[in-house]
Image 1 (cartoon, rainbow over the protein chains, first blue to last red):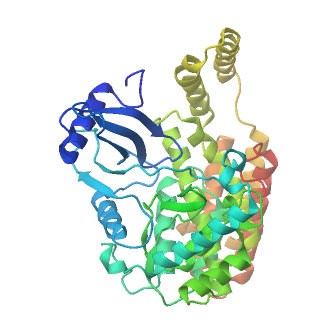
Image 2 (image 1 turned 180 degrees about the horizontal axis):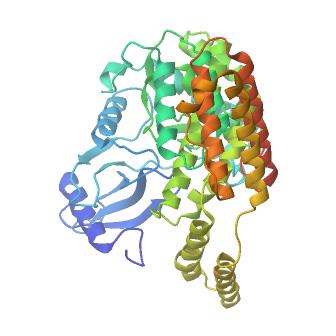
Length: 339
Length: 140
């Protein structure tokens, strides 16, 4: 890797040529290249591609590269691209797409490129660095938009996304099976409380009788704000056809409240639920919300276990992944209080 | 704690040496970090996990399994074999056996009392872990 940048020089040159081909730039080169290190799964790079033959021609881009072995493997980049394509034709704010590269010839792994959206991504644990969320009126305004977009996602035609709906069984069962298998494949030292929680879920199944597009990771940290408004919903890798209450419960998890009582550090939970009902026309059942909160915590714990496992296997020396192996106990503590 | 002590020491040393040290520009900070890496290497050859804590965890888990086995001796053949030997192996074995017991019980109707015993043990095991935890992440 080049000491000067986040990608090897040869990859930067190949990426510039790839972008130039699609944009009609004659002598493209990349500036402002930056790797975004917030996540542990898809690798995101942003930059500006400039045409040296016409200096006024430039295009801000973002590239999502499939990880070689991320925490949420396996990955299907074509499914991600198809979903994103479907969303660009909806009122849901997502970046406009450029193209998909399925081969590993350019960046060593498949990737897709989209426009770079200008703004900031507020996070729950470092709100002081993100002025957009310091003002209560901003939080409320953005919170309203956050819920409105969630309701839009849940009315987006799931059949247009390429995501297969559940095979007739309630989404709750499919979700329990998925995350239990994920944990089985990841865990090194078994955690009986997780098994008790999974058993609790199997004995408290809910079915809101709606199968919709679910974002799967809808929360603070996964949307971009500019001019006191949400301009992009990010990180769709956990999107699936499921029970929409899953997204509501996930957004309200204590993990994402930033030491506040607010859903995703934005809105009081009761207010958020009422707003959701008014935007979606769907009443939220409190039993369903409780169920999906418990299952959400199981789902939140699962990548922590895979992170520790990846570190143990020597795939990475990223110490954040090792730390996740004991941080999971904080999630379990909340889980223990709910079952 | 999910990771082995050997691997934690190894990963700590590699990450500090290869990722953090080159990024430091201050001479004193570099010297401090170099010393810390050396200390880590010397700790790695001298320390091991606390066996008393492993014994406590193994005891809580296995006692609960044995309690369930009194009324369901047929479960024994379905559980992972109880391991003798090093404390860490006995801990891992006992946790796996309790977890399997929960799975088996959850598929059976009318086992509320046994399930509750497992739940109590699982909470107790979490309390042991929380007591050892030193981090502010996700604190309410």
